[in-house]
Image (cartoon, rainbow, N blue to C red; front, side, top):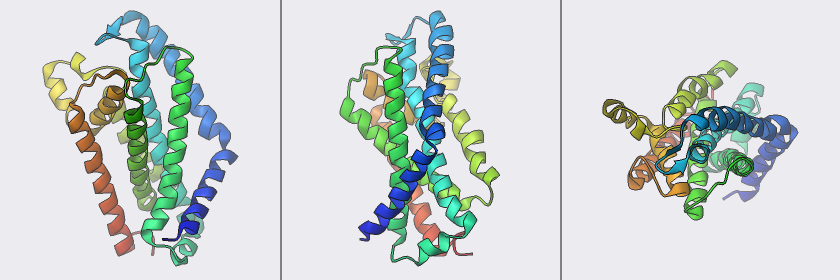
Length: 253
């Protein structure tokens, strides 16, 4: 395996993060503070608790998920799109690196950024409310797994996109609404029975439920089903990327 090639891509992508520190780090922190003001204070004052959990604490896992899903997709999609945009993708493809190694470089970098942002949001949240983590190891596991999975998804979007508008279509019109409707700021158990059943078709419900379980040992969905759903999506993304490199879809033409 070409470890030096993977590290080179990784370091380049990480250096881009620090060049745009305001957008990469400061923006999620400011957004977190605003969410806590609106949801934690304004709405939280009208909701005593959910399943015995104070509302301001309840929304922390959902808030982290909302941010890292967007960050993972954005970081990874922009990372592979820019080489396509400026033509340097051919230098990457001609380098002595396999498709697996190229993907690892971009995806690991994007996942690292997302995990960093997630931990920053968790730290910022702890300044406003006491946050208990029932299963710290599982919390880190889900944080890494979900960040990596959606970084792979973002990699696919970056290859698929022909312009900057397409880079934003899926994150803004599909991922963000599904995340809001997936129980980020409420429990799906609060919904009428019919809408609870409808919510089960929303993949974000399983991600948020699993991550919230790691905090409060309480989930809307059985944790085993949530883990299965995450790994299923991960496998689908890996298969799609392997097909893209085998066929050269939108990267060799």
